[in-house]
Image (tube, rainbow, N blue to C red; front, top):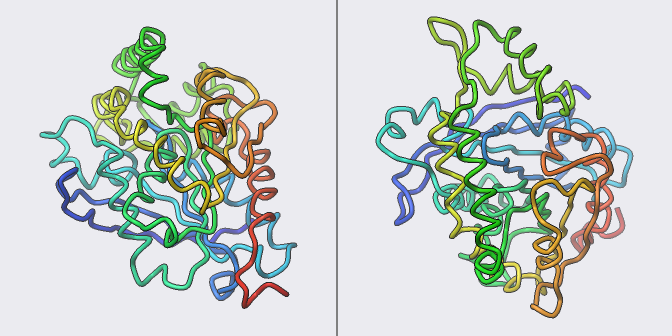
Amino acid sequence: MNLQVNHFVFDSPPSSEGTGLKITAKCYTVGDSARNVAGLTLLFTHCIGSHKEQWEPTISRLFEIQEKKGVAHRLCEAWSFDWQSHGDAAVLNHEALSTQRGVSIYEWAPALTAFVQSPRMRGHRIVALGHSAGAGAIMLTTRVFPVSQIPYAAVLLIEPTIVTRELFNTHKDDRMAAMNFAVNATSVRRDKWVSRDAAFEWFGSRYPWNTWDPRVVRSLTEYGLQDTPSGVTLKCDRKQEAASYPDTEGYFESAILIRRVCHALPIHIIWGDGNDLVPEFIQESLSDESEGRVVASVSKVEGAGHMIVQEQPDRLAQTVCDVLDTIVPSPAFSKL
């Protein structure tokens, strides 16, 4: 699928949660898809340590599958965003980040909300998709809207790391051990190579990157690295990435927000069938009707673990398309 790509830089709105760092985004279209005002506009957010382009294999497949559908279920646009401390945004914000330890999803969410509220999105049928930490950021964008006025046709939470405070505290030792492991592993991980080709070879021969789709590994070396006088290095500084893991408050609030909005907004959860990061008791809790979290659907993607976007982009795309096909068209386009 030949994606047409446009690059954007947006200012984050100053807020109590942040200092107005920039975010970067790409808008993807195919042919004249942007003229299809009846279609769906998809917004994507990524996980910790990732970047917006890791979604591209999935986005390409989504356009390919949906173009065969009715007008109301085809894609108009797809937007993918960098967290302020990740990807191209990390490069733009390098100086400001040097004095800031970590960027909370509480700072990412207002920037995403401002985009959703901008004239650019007026009249669009928006579906928001977040992976892992990005799922928490998506849920936080709903908190500023009255429940009846949330501007999404649906939300898809993909391997969300959302958890209630009570459940986290009940299993605190286990959760803290997993968190500390991620922080320590990130802090000592290699982050410099002599070239992109050398990095691609290194990633492709080591776990977990050797379990990823090769297109996503190539995306990492093409878009996740930046040039230096001695070679290439990660755009997302290891210290910034490591600081993101212990920042749990946004994920606690996201669990509350699921309960708040789920009766007015279809929320779909997608897991990998390889349960390698989010324990089953947390997965089940996010769709526990007895706790007031009534979701529209729960799906499993075969052959994927937590890094589902990286491991199975095509299978994930098919699962997402199955969800998109359940979205009811706007009344004006219900016969399309």
